[in-house]
Image (cartoon, rainbow, N blue to C red; front, side, top):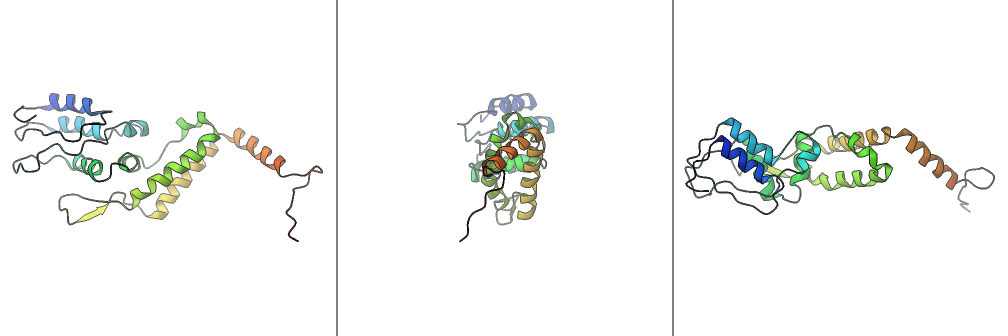
Length: 200
């Protein structure tokens, strides 16, 4: 896109085109673009739509660069855009999960309740796959000065996971009681006594 004088409207169109795109990795904008904060917001939303967890997941996690690195006159994009591009470039396998954890301190489990308890192991597995985000590092301006992607301890991450699991289970009390009854019945003997392992 070198030589094309992109403004806010053009940046918004580019942002819309990036949503769901999984092949484009580099987009070289002209250093003479005239984009205000409104145009950058539209582009930022394409990289990380924070309106919902699902929208964040469906954001663009592929594009890595929007400037030619050899262009010394290139504008400096807002910090959040630089961060998301860096995540896409350095940690593409974790980018979506990291963006979700960064943008949603509280993960609403209500939309998942219709899947029932069978979804619970999948939710636990998601958190396990997201755990590396607590150790990943990025940089803001100086590549030699890196910081953690998620500014939270391992204990805080575990607390967030347990809170989400608790809210998931609490959202379907009847289903939990039904499963509990089946579990108890499966370990009871014919006399109604809890079966015990003979340790002799």
